[in-house]
Length: 128
Image (cartoon, rainbow, N blue to C red; front, side):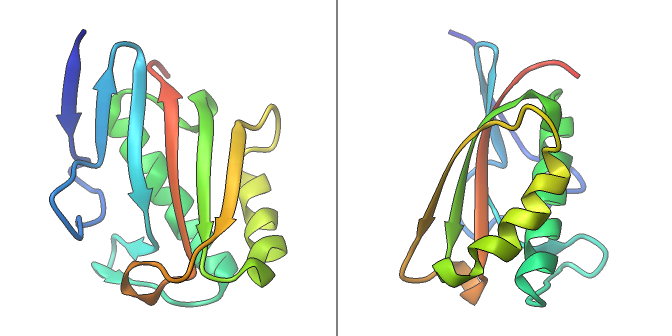
C-alpha cells in the first residue's frame, strides 16, 4: 500500500516527532491540530471559538497540502479540555462543515498540549 508522510509548508510547527499528515491509499490522516497562528508562529489562546476557528483553518491548510480539503473529511476527533466549552466549539465547527458534516467523536480530556482548550484531528479522502 502507498504511504506518504508530509508537512504543510505553511502549517503550524509540530510539538513532537510526527508528520502533519500521512496519505495511505486514498485516505489522508491528519495529526491533531492546535490553535497555532501562522502569521505570528504562536499559539492563540483566545476564546474557545477563536481557538476552534484557527485549529480548523490549520486542518484545512494541511489537508490542502496533502491534496485534499475539508469537504472530503469523513471523520474528526475533537478533544476538549473542558466539556463546558462544547457549545462554543460546536458553533464554530458547524461553520466549517455546513452540510453533510463528517462523523465525529468529541471527548473531554484532562489537559491538552500547551494548555490549549481544543485539539482536532481528521481523516479525509484524497482529491479536491
